Picture 1 (cartoon, helix red, strand yellow):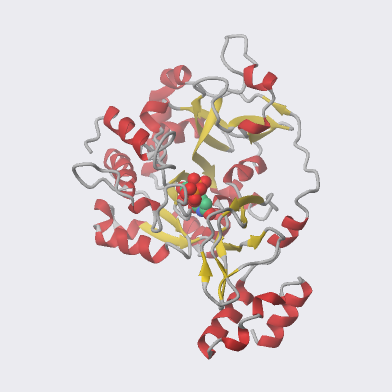
Picture 2 (spheres, rainbow, N blue to C red):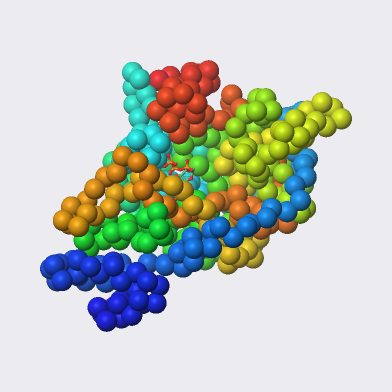
Length: 408
Ligand code: UTP
């Protein structure tokens, strides 16, 4: 892209300010800025300008979950079906590791975080150890796709290579990077991080399938005969991956997708819960729930909206392909975004100064015709590492790891 072309493009959207340092840049930086402008998706700005338009949610109703007791009864059948599918190569796993881990206060990949006390226990190591259990039981490798972002891709690859993929077969690991979105100031103008670089951040965990397709991996799935994808978050150190019982349940119930869920500890626990919205699977956030919804109970006394999502989904590739180009809602996160001052130096603000744009995987679930909420035992499968201290922290995850007999 030439300067003229960039200027014309930015004029249309009122963002020529992104070229305000252009005259001061050397040839290399000029080329890099023009290249970034040509690659940046500025359509996120439209969503920001329309953010105050009222978005009304559909009619929310409870969704029945498959509970632990039912799963226990049908476990042998589910496991057999799941293992058969795994042994015939139908399942691959997708690790979403493109996030920034800002709450944890780290700069590198979250998976490289060491949660050990007397020995090294890296988050990636924990995940791979869990996946290896299934690989060993099935006696077959499972393809593992890892989504990184521009910000942590090189470090993630180097870290895993240095640790020899924690015993995983590297020919069954495939990396791809997610798309980035520009960040804006309080008025919706795109920020520069340095004189020659637009401030961008990973565009959320909802765009993973499109990014996978862009990398050519959806074609690879077809070649390999993979029809199911187990997608999961990087930060749950008890994450059960490629769980044959879960896969078998999705297959046997003919569900379009499955979502692992945990039972809410009490009506006021602050988690997003699975529900139906206009008859389609959806997630209602804690703040969106009315008192009546929070406390509503079924005939058996359990909470009607009582199952929280833990970001572990089972998808069918064919269904994902049908919905991948549907426009998903853009979410806005108020964040501290480094930006360039008029002297050309980057400023790291102490307070939120702008907005980042994100797509959420739960909106993708809403595009599908159905979803099986599949209950799992919280203490056995859910130990998220989001914060340094308190809820969902290094501290709470360590306790849960110890409870599960994992030496730290
Ligand atoms: P979180 O929503 O916890 O975000 O991600 P985060 O970036 O890891 O952490 P904070 O909010 O900055 O503290 C949930 C899962 O989605 C992935 C994360 O890597 C994690 O597995 N994710 C999130 C992405 O892959 N890409 C994104 O853009 C955001």
